[in-house]
Length: 159
Length: 76
Image 1 (cartoon, rainbow over the protein chains, first blue to last red):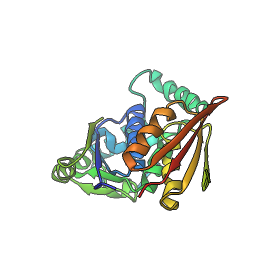
Image 2 (cartoon, each protein chain N blue to C red):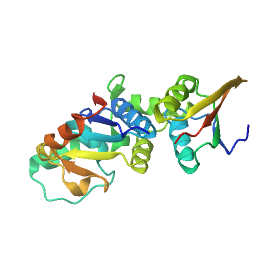
Image 3 (cartoon, one colour):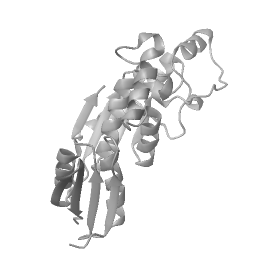
């Protein structure tokens, strides 16, 4: 086969539906034998959060951020029709009916397929997120690492 | 045609049929034939494109009672 192609996705959004799109594309690209990286920044970092509370040494403001942001993929809201939390419940019901995978399962599958899950360390600092709060498989990097992957990439997306 | 393995992806939604097929294909040898059954109608275009891009050969596609059946020969 020809040399390995690569797919690089920046997940900026912390919306459930947008993160789902990102992870569906990532899993599809992995099945295409691409080297796949999802670079999580800003609100997208919440997709990598563990769902249990983690003891961490934080400032007041960081604690507040931590409380206000969704703890893990399944707690994320919808970009449209959120309806104060009813929207996600409804869409998950519909997804089940159509056998669509929930975001948490898509993330696990991405891990199984060796998709690189990268957290942007600069925005982690801004949002007060610490390594202990994120999934074990998370890798840590900055803009240069993303660009190194993306400049030779075949598919580049910002979601 | 000798089918080496059958993948049942009926009822699965995108991207599962492709992901599952890729996993099974990895276990096979060059020249082996994989049969995939899927009900996701997007699979029609998906498998055509996937086989082409990953170096496998889509030998035939059949449709009966809403079930799509693909025969894919593993490439090098």
